[in-house]
Length: 272
Image (cartoon, rainbow, N blue to C red):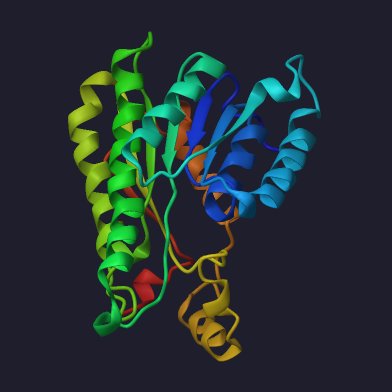
């Protein structure tokens, strides 16, 4: 039995929404009646992904309702590591849909590398995308929600990681950025509460996405990881979509801010 639409009339913007977790959240928001703007890096490699995303969005948005399908979603290219990208993305979403109710800071990069082999370009790119880009994009969303619309308010969701809470020998350049996203959401909850803006973090565990597909294709490593997860399986991107709807829906989570929600199949509590 389908769930009732929980986000009808809401406007959401999601960075890095063309693949993986961001894509799953974007499509679920559409299913729940929201208008959705999706940021993606852009370039020739994105073209087939854009075509598939447009097809899936159209399938969802043409199932009913009086609005045209194209009036409910927007794809915006741009490198989120650049400070102006977040501002431009928010501006285009507002130009298209009139306001901003939900912002998901999801764009990120992850590459496994031995600590002694991490070089300045890798560290710099990881920080500028995962943390600095998240900061500027979140600030742009917050300025819109707090100062440029009536009534003010909204929900900001940062996609952090279980890696914010535990170490990773081949992720020394990555885990600090995800800890930073968690901290950013906590501090933003304090700073933005007076505007009616709720800020929370989702912490995925081991989710099978394009970022770790090569690593998880090793059957020995995959079996090992599955054995550590109480629910007995790796996560899939749609596993994050439901919690993201919960945090976006004021009726369900209107008194939730500064929180961190682990979506990890129980992995964290089994790491002791």
